[in-house]
Length: 583
Image 1 (cartoon, one colour):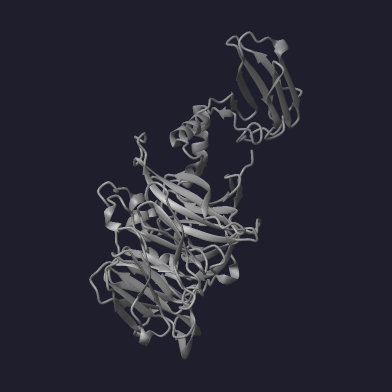
Image 2: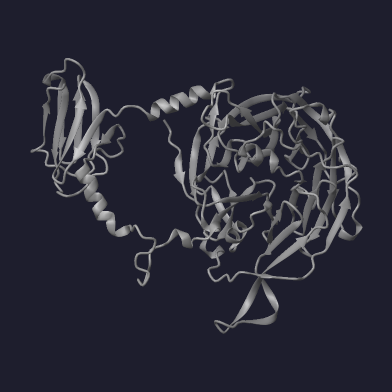
């Protein structure tokens, strides 16, 4: 069985700034433009039966504003009339009204258990669309933004079961066929789950294809389902369609269509609680291994070979245990005996007296180490100097122990740690795993629409942006940018709702549920001379922080950042904040 490679993210040191001094609040006004919408945004509020944290993550915090990364400063939203509305900005001072580019053929309000309608831009000429009722549309758009060639036309339209939202899609074109691969998210009821929330998260990977030489319609050629217990922070299909990457708290696994999750869980549990096949104990001088023998075993059925750093045990012509020992033994003094209780007892004499063995045979997980109470007490005594019953027993010491009460709330991470997994599209198995530990996930951004979306993680106090490269097996995730101290700063914003950054990394921004938007710019040279009074040196660059307050009491429903502008969507208005004057 293939085992997934445990990988790590390699930080590029030149992209870090250890001398970063913080953000300086700038009172420079930010030009802000407001557009009133003809019809309200099609917001879908959570129902009474959508009460879990996962429902809140997936649907309650949904971003209703969609950015078309293939075209500069072009955003879309869906209104209550079922219209997909587009605003493309050329000049801030001459803003037009959002224009209708497509209208959903179904009445959105007719379905009781619908979710929010979702859209994803697969390529410069293809779009995937869900109306929130369980129907998927694949739309050919022509060159968007070009009035002569833009025409939204349904090329595929099919009911796919329970309502879902689209979280990613790509377009694959080769000489023989054109395919659209899309990732759909559902939260489904799990009747047999008595301990958990009663729901599980389902990710469906659907591939729709059409052969170029035929005049046939587009049709589904592949449907695979992953299941997990938490909504993924990030999930994206690789540009060549050969794999999938997911960042989540709880792991995901592929299941066969129609296979019951409960069966999988039963198998997992049975594997976890499998009985050890042998038990072993150790003292400072020797080790004792105890093996339960099959009925009617005699000494003729047992063959044991002792070597200085190797052991081989054969029971009734079957290999029982064989491998390299953790450390060397005196193989000539090692013995074995059959006890009255129908068990085999093996005594191994340690070459290195006093050495504690963490395992008997390197890499073998079939045995269980039994420690006696005297050993546990000795270990506790050895570790006593590292612990204290008092919070700070000796405050006058040069380096007092860390006191958890001195940690700020924004430094305390979640107990559970996320992982980044890469799945192979053909074998459906995990090929790479990165344990993210305390590297909290912050947001994702599309830097290059031809590549996978980037994701931003907190590393210590900074926020680091990572670009996945599925083609580079040895260095799959590249550190491409750093937002200094942003990991620390954002943690103090308790009311934050959306987080984004410019595709050229010139600034990062976050917004609260109501009204306020915070902008954090990269350090830039100063036009005037500035000195650090403490160190008596000239400051070459300053990172500015700016705050914009929107003139509305409606909650913020959507938030997108481009290189020049921030777009903020509320129920009845679309706001544009001009962040950078030139690209």
